[in-house]
Image (tube, rainbow, N blue to C red):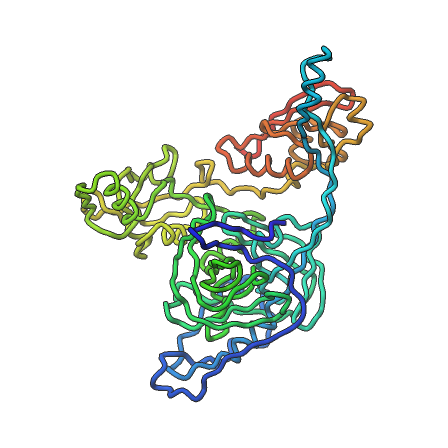
Length: 519
């Protein structure tokens, strides 16, 4: 498992926060002696718990209470709730056998010198990767055991163990994971677990107090306090990821990944994901995925097993970034778009929602369903709430004149269909790497055999038990992770087709086209 995600910004780095953590420590912050009239803070003593079990659906639909009267800050109640609902996640990546290629220039030279054919310096050999462990945090969001965490915490896990604040341990299974939002949903078999109510991250204000709760540096149930430093922050840590982070100066360190960002009323408002640091430990800011994104992703995992991502069908950039780039080309350029805020449309996809609604290159998107859009990260966050087929009202400027258009959002394949889960259960097969004897008999160096066949796409395509998959969509298939990668790529493509080539047990080559959509 990837223990850290790093992006260098000059001397600074954006670091994913998954690492080991054990032990126990709790922190609470209070400032009850401060004059009530001098602090613009909220009454946190009002309990949001009813004492009844909380289902995932009820929590996702939770409406935050009206903010209480201006009072002193007291984070002890929020800290207690959060500590009980934040868990320690330990993951294990088992030892695996990998085939690697190496090149021996001396063998290549002597083969040619003694006339033993065309080189042959490339060799394949197998290596055994060591067993690895790593850890992070998670947040219980329903009393029947649903837990949200970061994708990078559980992405490559073979075993997942969850430890509660009361030291009970459970084995967890993955319900869904999404690299683009860096979110994952896992579940343990338990009842009446403590939960955190899900708040509205849109209601957060810069300067508002928040708590970061997780398991950093071998210290479980650790609480740190700070304020919201910024919202809708884009870091550029991923070229394909969706980024609209809550920025906080509450101390976040390695091991906090997947932990809770909690407001002063004890509501979950974000999932801690990254830190920005020059040293690799906290010395700057932490970043959390807002619950506006998390709620939709979790609901999709629960219903579909994968994220239903709705796309505008544009590529764009912040207006101020576009203006600066044009002035860098020509310092005398007079760029007047009618605004200094919004998203400049750089390109419009031919089969996308924006094209169908009449949006053009050079337009500036300034609102979505009445919500002001000032930068690309805000546009990403706004559209993550929707699914393919949903309609939204987009406000934009063209030649400095305001216009609106109703867009019917589409998926990556350019349709409004529900995207099926990116897991191999759809294929209806079980798989195992071929043995050394099979490699020798069939003159193969790798391959993944269909060891068992049930009803599914493989059987429908005519594939039989024993078939050895060598390639899928031009990708060599050496292990099941390769097939999962090819399957996911095909599921998200416009063609929705998985092309498989391989050999039957007798060594005869065969190929199949597996249609992943119902159309």
